Length: 181
Ligand SMILES: [Zn+2]
Image (cartoon, rainbow, N blue to C red; front, side, top):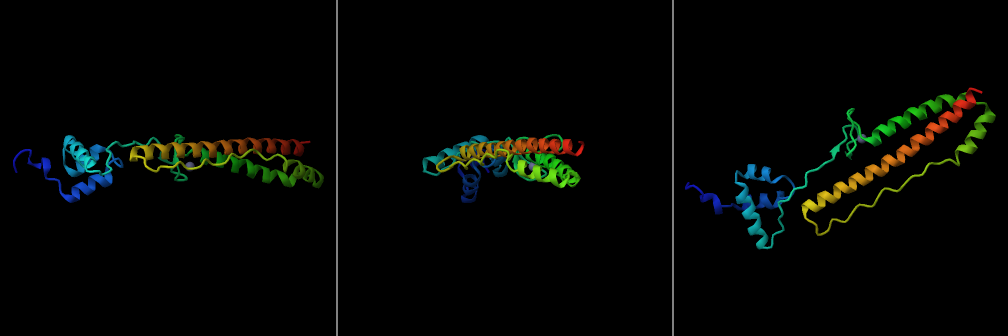
């Protein structure tokens, strides 16, 4: 094969591969898989766009990763390998377990007062944000918005859990006080 003769010999399969993967994986990976230069891929994408094919090579590199514990996309995974919602759920479960241990130590009268008062102390729960519309966006824009949305969801869930932990902590302290009276 003459040097440079690959310039225009794109097969249908290669074209389809490019259209299917542009913007979904880094351009460098596309070049590697097609064994083509960056310039060749760029020119082909340009030519396809001129033919009215929706192909954009810009790739959004995710900044979030799945939490090994719950599998949700997370921006808050710590060195123990858990996202903030998972950590807060653990914290909450520990406090609730402690409360469950303490409740039987209250007198029936104390328990009655406790139940009546605690019912009024629900902590605030913010609703999960609505998913964004991604109609008519490039893959880069879609990926960007989807990640921003995943971050907003995680932040809301984490904030709700932080409030729940705080409330449970106070509840536990009030019961401990009574038990120690
Ligand atoms: Zn998690």
